[in-house]
Image (tube, rainbow, N blue to C red):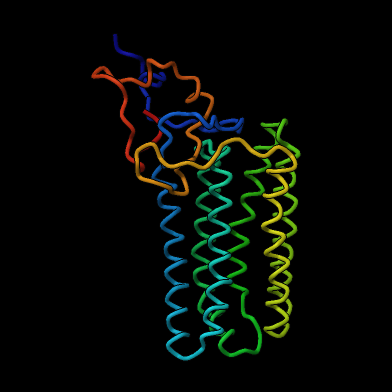
Length: 268
């Protein structure tokens, strides 16, 4: 019997438009990376590559101290944004249209940050002031969408709302600090001294949220496909519709299901 057009059986590859962020089951089987998340990873490769290139240029020119300082600063910005996206996706990735849209906005932020890496390195080599305006702009574009993501999670998961509130509060406070640092014209040494407490604030938020207020669902792991760690390996393929499948639906007629490759879509 043929299913009518538009029925769930006739459209098995249509992703849900919006899913409540109720938290991922850490024991969920066949957790894989989506193509969008793999593309997201590639934008970070661009930023890391640009940072490494500027490091090599300054070292070749004899500015070793400025090169190492700039590399540490840029690497923190890129790595911390990547880690925090992973942290959230490990707990609440719904793969709906709003999650995808915010992910694409963050991808634009990564590219903006990459454009800001060369002027930041050049200002450190000159030694007068820290030109981090474009870099901070990209960083803020990467981080602010996470406020929307965490807010969605807080609305849908009241039991973990205190923990999520810590993530949001420290995230907003840190971004305000980065913007202020980018706007003020202070000597390089002073600017670098002000960077340290902002980095500490960024790092303290997740520690307090996870250890004091009970934390978020999900734990980092490797992809069951054997491809190792990626930003999306622990991601939820955890909408209620996916988690509520019967065991029979995870098996093919030929026998037990096999792990998908890390780039395959999460829906059937």
